[in-house]
Image 1 (cartoon, helix red, strand yellow):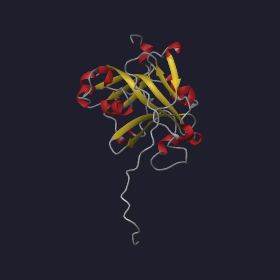
Image 2 (tube, one colour):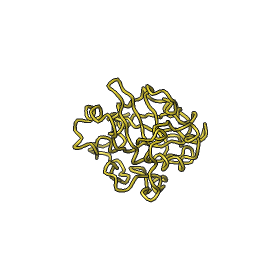
Image 3 (cartoon, helix red, strand yellow):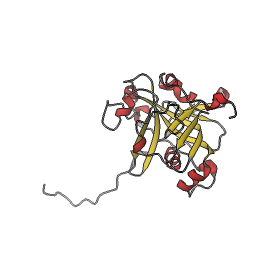
Length: 223
Protein backbone atom coordinates (compact mmCIF):
# COMPACT_ATOMS: atom_id res chain seq x y z
CA UNK A 1 0.00 0.00 0.00
CA UNK A 2 2.01 2.90 -1.25
CA UNK A 3 -0.72 5.43 -1.96
CA UNK A 4 -1.44 7.98 0.77
CA UNK A 5 -5.17 7.30 0.36
CA UNK A 6 -4.64 3.70 1.47
CA UNK A 7 -3.30 4.94 4.81
CA UNK A 8 -6.30 7.08 5.64
CA UNK A 9 -8.52 5.88 8.51
CA UNK A 10 -11.99 4.76 7.51
CA UNK A 11 -14.55 7.47 8.39
CA UNK A 12 -17.37 6.82 10.82
CA UNK A 13 -19.97 6.83 8.07
CA UNK A 14 -18.29 3.70 6.66
CA UNK A 15 -19.52 1.87 9.76
CA UNK A 16 -22.86 3.69 9.90
CA UNK A 17 -24.41 1.26 7.42
CA UNK A 18 -26.23 -2.09 7.65
CA UNK A 19 -23.95 -4.81 8.96
CA UNK A 20 -24.38 -6.95 5.83
CA UNK A 21 -22.92 -4.10 3.78
CA UNK A 22 -20.07 -3.32 6.14
CA UNK A 23 -18.85 -6.88 6.71
CA UNK A 24 -17.74 -7.80 3.16
CA UNK A 25 -16.46 -4.26 2.63
CA UNK A 26 -14.01 -4.74 5.51
CA UNK A 27 -12.09 -7.41 3.59
CA UNK A 28 -8.77 -5.97 2.49
CA UNK A 29 -8.91 -3.11 4.99
CA UNK A 30 -6.00 -2.75 7.40
CA UNK A 31 -6.32 -3.01 11.16
CA UNK A 32 -3.57 -1.18 13.05
CA UNK A 33 -2.88 -2.10 16.65
CA UNK A 34 -0.47 0.23 18.42
CA UNK A 35 1.22 -1.45 21.37
CA UNK A 36 3.99 -0.48 23.78
CA UNK A 37 6.31 -2.67 21.68
CA UNK A 38 5.32 -1.01 18.41
CA UNK A 39 2.55 -1.13 15.78
CA UNK A 40 1.14 -4.29 14.22
CA UNK A 41 -0.77 -4.08 10.93
CA UNK A 42 -3.14 -6.77 9.72
CA UNK A 43 -4.99 -6.98 6.40
CA UNK A 44 -8.43 -8.39 7.13
CA UNK A 45 -9.18 -11.59 5.20
CA UNK A 46 -12.15 -13.10 7.04
CA UNK A 47 -15.07 -11.61 8.98
CA UNK A 48 -18.56 -12.50 10.21
CA UNK A 49 -21.64 -10.29 10.46
CA UNK A 50 -23.98 -10.29 13.47
CA UNK A 51 -27.25 -8.40 13.09
CA UNK A 52 -28.28 -7.52 16.63
CA UNK A 53 -31.88 -7.99 17.74
CA UNK A 54 -32.91 -9.87 14.56
CA UNK A 55 -30.05 -12.38 14.71
CA UNK A 56 -30.25 -15.36 17.12
CA UNK A 57 -26.47 -15.75 16.76
CA UNK A 58 -25.76 -12.25 18.08
CA UNK A 59 -24.85 -11.34 21.66
CA UNK A 60 -27.41 -8.54 21.32
CA UNK A 61 -30.32 -10.77 20.29
CA UNK A 62 -31.97 -10.65 23.71
CA UNK A 63 -31.31 -6.98 24.30
CA UNK A 64 -28.81 -4.75 25.98
CA UNK A 65 -26.68 -6.01 28.88
CA UNK A 66 -23.63 -4.73 30.69
CA UNK A 67 -21.49 -7.07 28.58
CA UNK A 68 -22.79 -6.02 25.15
CA UNK A 69 -23.59 -2.34 25.83
CA UNK A 70 -20.92 -1.13 23.39
CA UNK A 71 -22.80 -2.81 20.53
CA UNK A 72 -25.75 -0.47 21.12
CA UNK A 73 -23.55 2.62 21.02
CA UNK A 74 -22.29 4.67 18.08
CA UNK A 75 -20.69 2.86 15.14
CA UNK A 76 -16.95 2.71 14.62
CA UNK A 77 -16.03 1.36 18.04
CA UNK A 78 -14.47 -1.91 19.18
CA UNK A 79 -16.52 -4.54 20.98
CA UNK A 80 -14.25 -7.01 22.77
CA UNK A 81 -15.60 -10.04 24.59
CA UNK A 82 -14.04 -12.90 26.56
CA UNK A 83 -15.07 -16.44 25.67
CA UNK A 84 -14.52 -19.99 26.93
CA UNK A 85 -12.73 -18.55 29.94
CA UNK A 86 -9.52 -18.03 27.99
CA UNK A 87 -9.85 -16.10 24.69
CA UNK A 88 -10.72 -12.59 23.60
CA UNK A 89 -12.44 -11.73 20.30
CA UNK A 90 -12.48 -8.37 18.52
CA UNK A 91 -15.56 -6.95 16.79
CA UNK A 92 -16.38 -3.64 15.14
CA UNK A 93 -19.71 -1.96 15.89
CA UNK A 94 -21.67 -0.81 12.86
CA UNK A 95 -25.14 0.30 11.73
CA UNK A 96 -27.12 3.10 13.39
CA UNK A 97 -26.73 3.69 17.11
CA UNK A 98 -29.09 1.41 19.02
CA UNK A 99 -29.17 -1.24 16.29
CA UNK A 100 -26.33 -3.33 17.76
CA UNK A 101 -24.77 -4.55 14.53
CA UNK A 102 -21.30 -6.00 14.82
CA UNK A 103 -18.60 -7.58 12.67
CA UNK A 104 -16.36 -10.24 14.18
CA UNK A 105 -12.79 -10.02 12.86
CA UNK A 106 -12.02 -13.68 12.23
CA UNK A 107 -8.65 -13.64 10.45
CA UNK A 108 -6.03 -11.50 8.82
CA UNK A 109 -2.65 -11.36 7.13
CA UNK A 110 0.06 -9.64 9.19
CA UNK A 111 1.68 -6.92 7.10
CA UNK A 112 3.92 -5.24 9.68
CA UNK A 113 5.05 -5.86 13.23
CA UNK A 114 5.55 -9.57 12.66
CA UNK A 115 8.06 -9.77 15.49
CA UNK A 116 5.53 -8.40 17.99
CA UNK A 117 2.83 -10.80 16.80
CA UNK A 118 5.23 -13.78 16.88
CA UNK A 119 6.16 -12.96 20.48
CA UNK A 120 2.50 -13.30 21.46
CA UNK A 121 1.89 -16.35 19.24
CA UNK A 122 5.09 -18.43 19.62
CA UNK A 123 3.33 -21.67 18.65
CA UNK A 124 2.28 -20.37 15.21
CA UNK A 125 3.86 -22.61 12.56
CA UNK A 126 4.22 -19.69 10.13
CA UNK A 127 3.23 -16.09 9.61
CA UNK A 128 0.00 -17.13 7.89
CA UNK A 129 -1.13 -18.65 11.19
CA UNK A 130 -0.40 -15.62 13.38
CA UNK A 131 -3.95 -14.25 13.03
CA UNK A 132 -5.75 -17.27 11.56
CA UNK A 133 -8.93 -17.34 13.61
CA UNK A 134 -10.56 -14.74 15.90
CA UNK A 135 -8.83 -15.79 19.14
CA UNK A 136 -5.46 -15.99 17.40
CA UNK A 137 -5.97 -12.57 15.83
CA UNK A 138 -6.81 -11.00 19.19
CA UNK A 139 -3.89 -12.76 20.90
CA UNK A 140 -1.39 -11.72 18.22
CA UNK A 141 -2.51 -8.11 18.58
CA UNK A 142 -2.63 -8.07 22.37
CA UNK A 143 -6.36 -7.33 22.43
CA UNK A 144 -8.27 -7.68 25.68
CA UNK A 145 -11.29 -6.17 27.43
CA UNK A 146 -9.35 -3.00 28.19
CA UNK A 147 -9.89 -2.07 24.52
CA UNK A 148 -13.66 -2.55 24.69
CA UNK A 149 -15.33 0.64 23.46
CA UNK A 150 -12.21 2.00 21.73
CA UNK A 151 -12.92 4.42 18.86
CA UNK A 152 -11.33 3.00 15.68
CA UNK A 153 -12.07 6.02 13.47
CA UNK A 154 -9.68 8.62 14.85
CA UNK A 155 -6.72 10.28 13.12
CA UNK A 156 -4.35 9.84 16.06
CA UNK A 157 -1.56 7.54 14.93
CA UNK A 158 -0.90 6.61 18.55
CA UNK A 159 -4.45 5.37 19.10
CA UNK A 160 -4.55 1.72 20.23
CA UNK A 161 -6.80 0.62 17.34
CA UNK A 162 -7.44 2.08 13.89
CA UNK A 163 -8.89 0.81 10.62
CA UNK A 164 -7.18 2.10 7.48
CA UNK A 165 -8.72 2.25 4.01
CA UNK A 166 -6.27 -0.32 2.67
CA UNK A 167 -7.10 -2.05 -0.60
CA UNK A 168 -10.64 -3.47 -0.66
CA UNK A 169 -10.81 -7.07 -1.86
CA UNK A 170 -12.03 -7.46 -5.47
CA UNK A 171 -15.62 -8.68 -5.50
CA UNK A 172 -14.70 -11.76 -7.51
CA UNK A 173 -12.38 -12.86 -4.69
CA UNK A 174 -15.00 -12.55 -1.94
CA UNK A 175 -16.93 -15.62 -0.85
CA UNK A 176 -19.62 -16.09 1.78
CA UNK A 177 -21.21 -18.95 3.68
CA UNK A 178 -22.53 -20.01 7.11
CA UNK A 179 -20.83 -18.63 10.18
CA UNK A 180 -18.37 -20.82 12.05
CA UNK A 181 -19.73 -22.56 15.14
CA UNK A 182 -23.13 -20.84 15.09
CA UNK A 183 -26.06 -23.13 15.86
CA UNK A 184 -29.81 -22.81 16.22
CA UNK A 185 -31.88 -20.48 14.07
CA UNK A 186 -28.83 -18.47 13.00
CA UNK A 187 -26.87 -21.47 11.78
CA UNK A 188 -27.66 -21.12 8.08
CA UNK A 189 -27.24 -17.36 7.68
CA UNK A 190 -24.49 -17.00 5.04
CA UNK A 191 -22.88 -14.11 6.88
CA UNK A 192 -19.28 -15.26 7.01
CA UNK A 193 -17.15 -13.52 4.36
CA UNK A 194 -13.60 -14.29 3.30
CA UNK A 195 -11.04 -13.71 0.57
CA UNK A 196 -10.84 -16.96 -1.33
CA UNK A 197 -7.43 -18.55 -1.68
CA UNK A 198 -5.84 -16.50 1.10
CA UNK A 199 -3.85 -18.82 3.40
CA UNK A 200 -4.64 -16.80 6.52
CA UNK A 201 -8.36 -17.63 6.33
CA UNK A 202 -9.45 -20.03 9.06
CA UNK A 203 -11.17 -23.36 8.25
CA UNK A 204 -14.95 -23.50 8.52
CA UNK A 205 -16.35 -25.58 11.36
CA UNK A 206 -20.05 -26.27 11.79
CA UNK A 207 -21.68 -25.93 15.18
CA UNK A 208 -21.18 -28.93 17.45
CA UNK A 209 -23.55 -29.20 20.43
CA UNK A 210 -21.72 -29.52 23.72
CA UNK A 211 -21.85 -33.01 25.11
CA UNK A 212 -22.74 -33.43 28.73
CA UNK A 213 -20.74 -35.96 30.65
CA UNK A 214 -22.76 -39.02 31.57
CA UNK A 215 -23.47 -39.08 35.31
CA UNK A 216 -23.57 -42.21 37.40
CA UNK A 217 -27.16 -42.99 38.41
CA UNK A 218 -27.04 -43.33 42.19
CA UNK A 219 -30.80 -43.29 42.69
CA UNK A 220 -32.92 -40.72 44.54
CA UNK A 221 -31.13 -38.17 46.69
CA UNK A 222 -32.46 -36.01 49.46
CA UNK A 223 -32.67 -32.28 48.82
